[in-house]
Length: 176
Image (cartoon, rainbow, N blue to C red; front, side, top):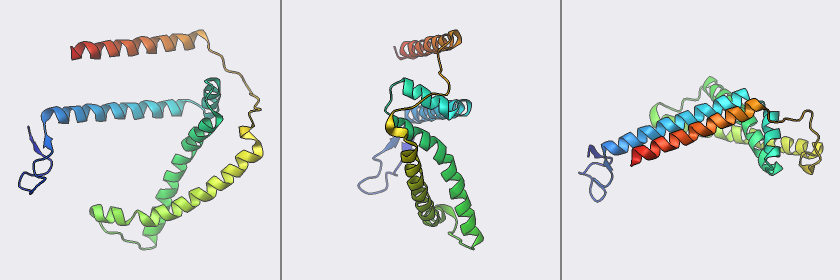
């Protein structure tokens, strides 16, 4: 045991949560796995066009509402990040000084979130009307181009499957 999150000297709850070397190792491993997952997802999104994602999800027989939510989230999250940064810079240009440290960060959230949420709701209303007017959820869609699997696609899927099985076996053998 390396120590405690809450010092032992604190009455009632002191020494309740201990910190061990194993816990730190597991935390580091999970953090690295999460970073690899995020990196792989970002690489996937950068290298794939949104219309190809939509076609693939439709072929997987996913409900159109889920496909729509996924694509809208992919499109609007970067937009909201950029808009949040602009609102923050505008607040600073107006002389708003929330302070420094953790308290300053907490105080700076409200003047950004309120206009950001109101703009997002306005955009979502316009987007909802656009979706309804285009008949996106009617189910009668035509494809500009049809995607089919080729030999290279099956080869990549096979290599990824074999790699996943190999990693799984390696982990299982290490646990024994």
